[in-house]
Structure formats: structure tokens, C-alpha cells
Length: 272
Image 1 (cartoon, rainbow, N blue to C red):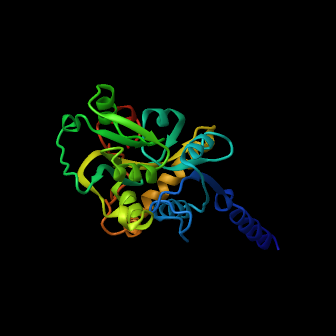
Image 2 (cartoon, rainbow, N blue to C red; image 1 turned 90 degrees about the horizontal axis):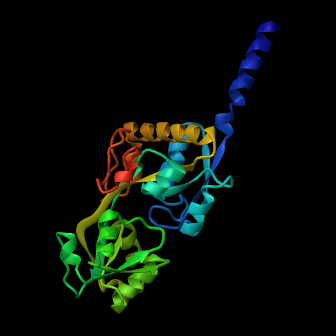
Image 3 (cartoon, helix red, strand yellow; image 1 turned 120 degrees about the horizontal axis):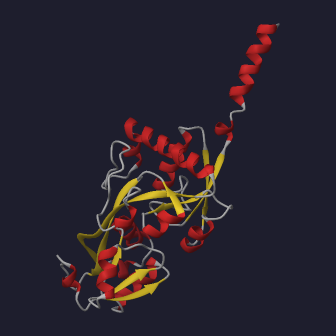
């Protein structure tokens, strides 16, 4: 009888483990194919995050919101964090960053009938560049705007910038080509899509992360848990399987290599 009671007590301890029952909440935006509110898996970045946490016995709920609202609410008690974002000094001060999930690059989209090739920022002299609110484009473009080399035009959506580009209201639009090509193929009229292309030279190269809010010890626990799960996906090869063909592949280990050296303020975290 005593042995049965001991065995029963041990079974209860493992059954009610708080980690195995915990669900975290992340605010995010609709940004296919990375994050897709309309797809079954939520987009491949959401699937990576979900599987990384699942290896540690945790679940995740994503709330799809406008990006500005997602970033704002991620710093409150309503959410545990937000995904996916590159590292900037401001974000590194407000949040605890995960290890890098996947590398990315921003390139310049331009009109197909308007030849464009650039090697240095001076080659952009006189260009009008469309920007989307809440994106981080890197120090190179910021400096070019401050020096008057380029003019910038801020709007609230990528679609609006693509339409401005076709209409000739802007000359260039820096964008992640993975998302840009998806939008052109799936969300813009065919007549518009055929008028847009991009230059492959990257304006910015960095990495995407989950940002966990800094409310107490919980953020430290969650980022350690997520990083451990992400490392398991990398070493097992599962992470590469989750990345669609043709996309940049993540590192095969959990090292914190810097992305672009222009992200100076993020060197204490993984840059992005």
C-alpha cells in the first residue's frame, strides 16, 4: 500500500508540471508567408515558434493585430511578447530578445521599366523612398535621409507603398523580398504586379527574433525556454525543414552571430 501511494504521488507530480500546461500569448501581425492569419499553420515563422516551444512542453497563442498595436501591447501585461522583429536599440531596451530565428534582408523594389542599380548610398541621390510605419531599415538609409541624399515618404502599409511605386509617387521601396514577392503574386492586381521588380543587393541584412516583455523573472524564463527549444529544432534539422525552399537558411547552432554591423546598438543581444 505504501509503495502504491508513493508511485501515485510521483505520477501526480509529473502530471501537473506547470511548464507542460502553460500557454504564452504573443501579439503579431499579418505578414505572409512568415505570419499568416488565414493559413492553418499561421505562417512558417509562427510554426517555428510553436514547435520550438512545444519541445519544452509549452503552447502559444498568436493574436494578429496591426503592427503598431502589437508592439505596444507586447510591453504590457496583456501579452508575453511579440513576433517577429529585427533588433534595434530601442527594442533591445524595451524587450528581452530571443536567439535569431531566421536571417533576412531588405532590398529595393522599383518599377520594372525604370532601370536601377546601386553600389553605394550615393547612388540613391535624388530618389524618393517609400517607407512603412514601424519598420527598421537600418542606419545606412537613416543617415542618407538625414543628409538629404534621399527623400522619404512614410505610410502605414506595404500595399500602399507598392501602389505608390507603380504610380510614380515614389522611386524605391525597401522590403523583405520574401514578403514582397508574396504580396506581388497574391495580393496585388496582375497589371500592377507586372510593373514591379527588385534589385538583389541588400540594403540591410539582419535576423528575426521573438521579443519578450521585460516584466519580471517571467521574461527570462520564457526566453531561456524558447531558445532551448529553438536550439533543438536547429540541431535536429527540423528548423531547415520548416523554412520554404529558396529562403535564407538559419544557423545550424544556437550561436549569437551578429547580423549587419550597422545595428551597433544591438551587439549585446543578437543583432537584427
